[in-house]
Length: 275
Ligand code: C2E
Ligand code: MG
Ligand code: MG
Ligand code: MG
Image (tube, rainbow, N blue to C red; front, side, top):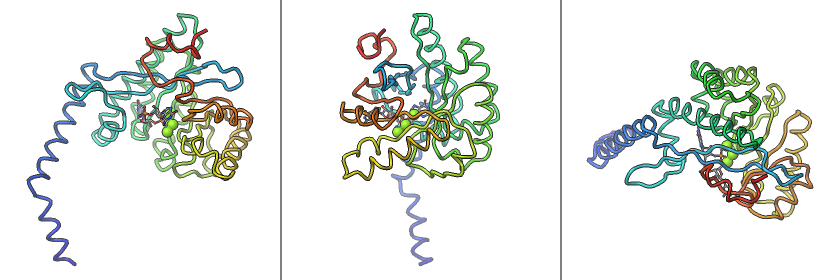
């Protein structure tokens, strides 16, 4: 076995592997440039109040307009950003852009809050809170208009968890993203205050599986209510899903049914969002 492992290790130095290392270095350099030179593009997706059908906020979703590659989704570069630490300056750009956009909406008479996805790595950096404070001051956005979205992975990182609770002290709201797909722990949920629980689209997309998923979603909605948190259902694509969630007591929803993530400029074209 040792010999085989040795063989495997030698194979690490195949020329293709060297190419992969080079490609990664190029990606990293390009991503650094992207953050510095304004190649990051912010899309916003409406978050709709299920009782009224109106948008009350927007989730900020980052894209990279990469020269020669087109518009890349976060799945293609957030991982690299996290591994290289570039997530910190990238995340600050997203935060600043989102807060400025929320202020612009405010000036247009639209009371829309914004949510921003924040990775555990970002939160655990001691500089996060001061930069958040700076962004809020610079933009003038009232903290309660901003929601920070984190995933359950935050519970595995003590520094990030502490950072998160400091964030909440400033009045910024905290949402638990993709709830139910990570390491859900009732004791953590009970111990730490969250303002919003976002029900992952893997649940909302499976509501017709003979009642099992529907039962779980009902429990999540009830649990959130007991804990004093609002619920947002993700990935709503059909009216049936929206109707069912509303009847189940879910507060808000997000999904292609209401609007795809898009540039703020294009929001006027979306009927569900105006007014
Ligand atoms: P997320 O926070 O759970 O965002 C929701 C994802 O679901 C988005 O994908 C959105 O485009 C997609 N989506 C929305 N409605 C529907 C629907 O009706 N059907 C389906 N099938 N999908 C829908 P996106 O934009 O590709 O983002 C993927 C993930 O990347 C996000 O998941 C979030 O975890 C991460 N991300 C996005 N922006 C940022 C950012 O600025 N910073 C960090 N750290 N992560 C980000
Ligand atoms: Mg999110
Ligand atoms: Mg989500
Ligand atoms: Mg998700």
